Amino acid sequence: MADIKLGLTLYCFTPEYVKGVLDLEGIIRTAAEMGYTGYEIVATQMCPDYPYVSDRFLGELTAMNRYYGMEIVSYAANMDRGLRHDRNLTEDEMLARAIVDLKSANKLGATVMREQYLCGPNVLKRLAPYAELYNVKVGIEIHNPEYPTSPYMQEYLRVIQESKSSYIGFIPDFGCFAVKPNKPNWDAALRNGARLSMLDLAAKLRFDEVPMEEAQKKMAAAGANGAEMGAFSGMYGFVTFYSKPDTQGLKKIMPYCVEMHGKFHYIYEDLHEHSIPYEDILPAIAASDFDGYIMTEYEDHDPVSGDTFTQMARHIAMEKKILGLREGVRR
Image (cartoon, rainbow, N blue to C red):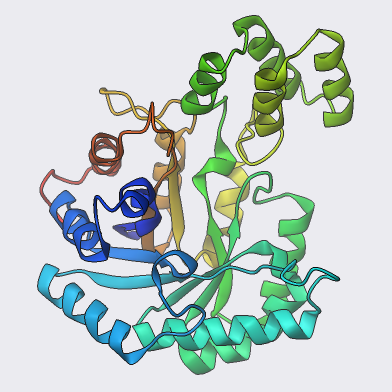
C-alpha cells in the first residue's frame, strides 16, 4: 500500500516571486497555510549561489522551514547540455555538474534530486554511487514529449535496473498523461488571434498521431496564422497529449519512482483537471507501493488566465478528494 505525501514545487509561485509579491519566506509560509508539508526547490531559480549553497542561505532556509513546519524534500537540478556556445557538454562534464548538484542537495537536507533527461542514461548510471554517498535519490523527470514507455525512457529503465541501485529512478510528470490540449494554452491562442476551427484541426492531427512534419504541412495548407502554428507546436511538444495515456507504463515503472510531479494547468470548481486524468493516475499510485511525495506543479503563468492561489487550493483539494484524505489533514 502506498504512503503518499502531498508537497509542492516552489516553481508554482513563479509569477509572484518574479514580481516581488512573495519572497522565498512568503512562498514557504503560503504553502504551509495551504496544507502542504514538504517542497521541491528549483535551484536555478531560488538558490542565489547556484550551483552552490552558501552557509548563509542554508541557515536562512533552515530557520524558515523550522518556523513554518515545512521540510525541503527535493532539489530540482538543471542539466544545461548546451552550456557552451561551441559544443555540447561531454558525458564527463555533465557527470561533474550532477555531482556538484548532489552535494548542494545534500547540504540543504534534500533526500531527492530531480535530474533532467538531457543528461543521458549512462550519466545517470555513473551517478548512482555518488547518489548513495550523499544519500540523495536521483530521479529522471519523465516530461512531455516523453512518457514511461517511450524509447528513451526505456533506455533509462534498462540502466536503472542494471545498476541495482535504489538511488536512481524516475520522477513522472503528470503532464505526460494529458488526454487533450490544456485550457490556458488554448485560451491564450484564441486571445492572440487563433481561429477555433484551426485549433480543432491541430488537435485532431495530434489525436490522429499524424507525424509532426506532415501535420505542419496540413496546417500551412489550411492557412494557419502565427498564433495557430504556435499552439500547434505546443500540441506536438511540451504540452502534447494522447488519446490513450500511458498509465499502464506508469504502473510498470512504479517500483523505480522516487517522487511524482503533480503537473496541472486548470482545475474547475468541481475539482476536475481539464486535460490530465487525475482520476486514473492517483488511484494507480495509491494501489502501488510508492512511498514518497506528489509535488504539486502549477503551470499557467499567463498574466491573463493565471490564478495561482485559487488553482493550487483546488489542486490539493482534488488530490485529497481522490485519495480519500480529509480536508485539513496535512500529509
